[in-house]
Amino acid sequence: MLDKVLIYSRLPKSMTQRFSDRFDLLDTGGKPAREVFSAEEVAQVRALITAGATPLAAEQMDRLPALGAIVCYGTGYDGVDLKAAAARNIAVGHSPGANAAAVADVAVMLMLASTRRLVVADAYVRDGGWAGAKPSPLMRPPPSLAGCKVGVYGMGAIGRKIAARVAAFETEVGYFNRTRYDDLPYQYVSSLDALAEWCTVLMVAVRASAETTHVVNAHLLKKLGPDGHVINISRGSVIDQQALVAALKDGTIAGAGLDVFEKEPHAPDELTALPNVVVTPHIGGNTRESHVAMQACVVANLTAFFVGEKLPYAVSASSGAYERV
Image (tube, rainbow, N blue to C red; front, top):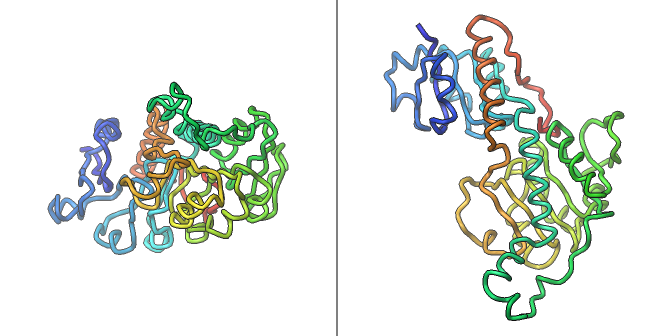
């Protein structure tokens, strides 16, 4: 008999099909488990798969009395109450580094699109502005990336790959992280405020946590300055979205590239209406190769748990907020 695994978050079938050959999946479709399955079935659930951002608090854990493992599909686990899990002796796993290259690629894509005003340039051709030689202040020459200072906030696997990629554009690279790494060839900056003052492009690559919530605020955006751009491939909670809208509107900063938002999916609003912001629908890790790698981590974590072994890709209750791995 296959071990029962609850699909706690709403995940596409294409993401979970690989698991059905190894486990007996109980897919909630994102609904509370007791609304979909009988109390007897729920009581038998020893492990679940969840999207890292989906809230999973002590109350939900208590409704699954046999729960022993929470396995996050992807690198993030910010929705999981790690302290509550530890108190209940529930192991938590994720997929560290599995999508790092894909997310770093999107970070660079957003940086180029924002700094070179891709959305504005695209519209200028499509609406006839270029053919009609119509003047456009948004088409004025931007600063070059060569010699530009790029600051990476969070130097985990994703941050490192971002740094390596942007360095190829002949930029200066600096970073702020809770840990300073001697093996990195990039400039270490002692605080996030100092990093914002130093750089022109701020790459946000940290984990979501209470410590990082709205840490990119009006004060920090002002330090970034009128030529500055902020790129976020981490979590929407890291940026104060209303402060960002204000900064984009009044010229406090030049632009932004966002793959994540405070509320997802993100509906069109005053943020998406601005011409100096580039947005994508949280697609950073969405490549075929990334999904294969993340699914392999999920399978490895679940397999280890059901045979009584330690999760190979475990998360600890003290995991740092500064490194998005």
